[in-house]
Length: 353
Image 1 (cartoon, rainbow, N blue to C red):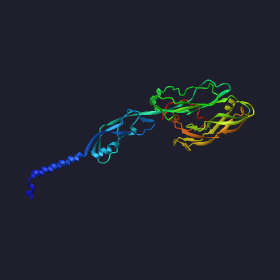
Image 2 (image 1 turned 180 degrees about the horizontal axis):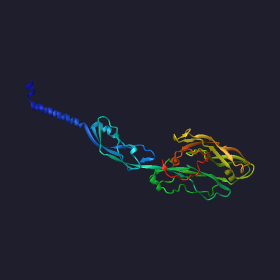
Image 3 (image 1 turned 90 degrees about the vertical axis):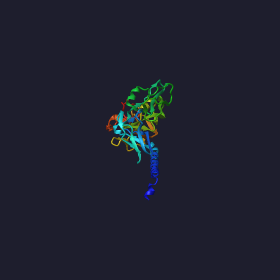
Image 4 (image 1 turned 135 degrees about the vertical axis):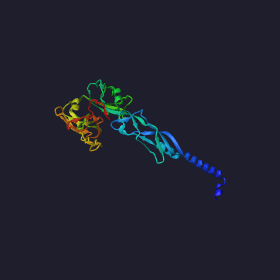
C-alpha cells in the first residue's frame, strides 16, 4: 500500500500544490479592499449655532471585507463627531465613531481630524411702521392704521448684521384723495446674503382707516375702532383674529368723528401666561375666544349710547416673543398695566436665537 502511494509521488504532490493555489486564489477573489469617502453626520446644535458652508462633509476611510459586504454596507456608513467639541468659528475635531459597520467588515480611518465651521446665529426683530404723506380731502381724516404682520424676525450670523444697516422697511403711503378705508400690500424688503426671515412671509399689508370728520345726530356706525390687549404677559405676543371692531351708537348731539374715535376704546383681556420653567404657554398655545369690552370717555361722549359691537368676540393666538432672551430669564415683572401687541417698540440688540 505504501509503495502504491509513493508511485508517481512527484505528480501527486504537484496536484496537491496546484489545488491549494487554486483554493487560495478563489478565497482572495472574494475579498475586496476599497478606499472611499463616507458622509459626516452633523449633530444638532443648540444656542443658535449651525454648521456653515466650507465645513468637511465627508471622511476618508478604507473598507475591507467580503466583496458583497463591502458593496452593500459602504453606502450606509456614517461618521459622527462630538457636539461638545464644536464652538463658534473653525473647529478641527476627531471622528468619535463610525456607524453602520456590520460584523465581518473592517473600516480603517485615513485621516485624523475634520474641519467643521460653526456659525452663531442671532435674531433681530424689525418693527414695521409705515410712514404717510399728504392729507385726505376736507371733512375726512385718518383715524387709525394696522400693519400685518406688525414685525419681522431676521436670523443670521452676527457678523452679517453689520451689512444690514438701516433698511427702508415700508414705502411711504399717500393719503391724498382718500375718502374711505383702503389696504396696500408690499413685498417684504430683500435681505443681504447670509440673512433670512424666520417665518416664510412674502408680503406685508397696511390697512388705513379713513372716516368722515363729522357726524349727525341719530344712529350711526363707527368703523375701525382698534382692539387693545390688557395684561399681556411681557414674554408673549398676541395675534387677534380681528384687529378692529365696528361700533353702532346713537348720539343726541352732533359729534366730530375724531371725538368718537379717540373717545372709544375696545379692549380684551389677554390672560395666558409664559412659564419660564417649562418654557411653554399656560394653559396651552391654542387660540382663545375672548369677549370684547368697549369703554367710552364719559366727558366727550356723555350723550352717546352704545348699541352694539361687531364682532363682540375675537380669537387670540399667543406666541412666545422671538426676542425673549433679551429680557433675561423670562420671569414676569408683576405689572398690571396694559400692553398693545401692535404698538411700536425700539429695535432690540441682536440675541441668540
